[in-house]
Image 1: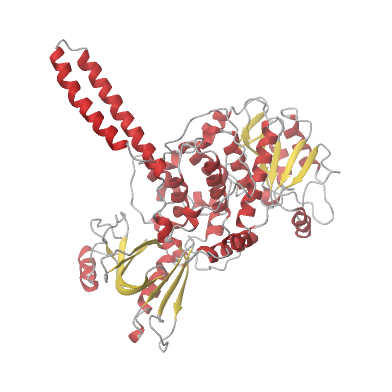
Image 2: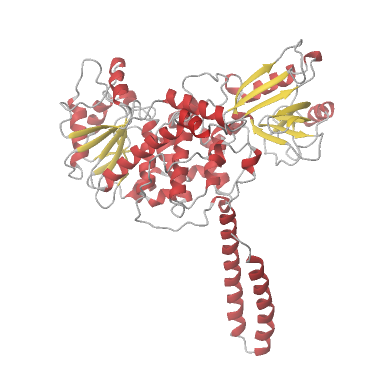
Length: 605
């Protein structure tokens, strides 16, 4: 079926305007109601359908599918029921029932989403009525094998180029690098040392390029220890890397041992602390596949600490269990025991606890090395959370964007593998909610320190929504080299371009800058809570509770303050004028206005 561009954008690459108009006429297409369509978004099909809403029973309406989204609006009642689902959010599409299925609404489609919800649609059984919609959904939700992700088709334009938010050299200079202890190396400029690392790395000043090459042979995926963060006062550092290739025979590498000594000596740390994110038993098991950990005999000036954070498979199963108890209905009768059985908050606790240990050690003046198996999942969680605790810059709206670009995107968290952008293989064992877990940890910190973060909860939810949507290029592919070879910066729009086009939406009104404050959240089960406004947000009961009345009233007060300051300036200007009559006239309505506002504000919090 030919595609037709949605008005008002005539940007279809799929044919001339006359054929598109004919296609629109034959499908009886109308512009999507209530939705701002995107430049580059094209209408594919409209269809009468029944949405089996888990909260409102079956609802008749019309579904419109574009190359970016599925949009449904009901037609059978005055109460609006709408769905606006980016196709990138879809994980699985299954046919429900068959041609001979009995029972009302037993024939249709079931859609599993990556954002904690499932969708069910029913169609008429005669004439294979679901075939066209199934094939179109499958084609546009999973374009990896035959086409392009929507980010490459989007024609959105913004004033700011979000790809310039993070400049590595600028960020290292902000930290006080390079200096007499640490140098910048371009040994990886063509991704020859490590194809999953960025091109610009910071390493010990005394380490030569040849040293780095030798160390790379002894680290999994050649991910050598490199600097993530430098403490300006005590010169302690956070280093990140992958596991050493010790193997069952207990191999040693003198170059790797000496390299870790150079890290330790850089600021005079007596004993380097190595934080291995894995449980001890998993690290030992990794020896069987050629990996392992730093043994006491080989690394005598280092202390090894296991943080007991489980692997990607355990986290995936934990989230599945969480989804089972929150969607579509919350398990009310045994809520606490059901939540505990998912182990989700337990995992959050372990990640936060590990990051606190890293931050505390660095704050006390000791350098640390952090790794898991390959150094792109749990390692990214720990380094970025510790940096968030230590450095108030990362707690600003811009700084948080820099942190994600640096520690997650730049250092090769496997977004494509963990999320499965455009990939139909929903059962892929590489899928895992590692980044979601990190954002959850950030949310826990914002709850415990409500004035310490410049950004609000809305930013975190928007980031997660576009982690899946494929509307922007920010989270596509597994590493910098893959993004470069696919020309992502030139061919797609950055998420930060969109977010920074209206930052007022993401500002926390309670924010109080404190440049030297280190945050130590309480990582105990008593102080952690389920992020209800994310995990259970599709439930209508929760949606009504999402706007915080205190935050809303505080915003109103801030706006009123700005208004009074402006009035004061006007009064001061008029006061300096020669005419006293003018002053009297101008001040009278201001007083009336003030009284009106004061009356308006006399409502309970």
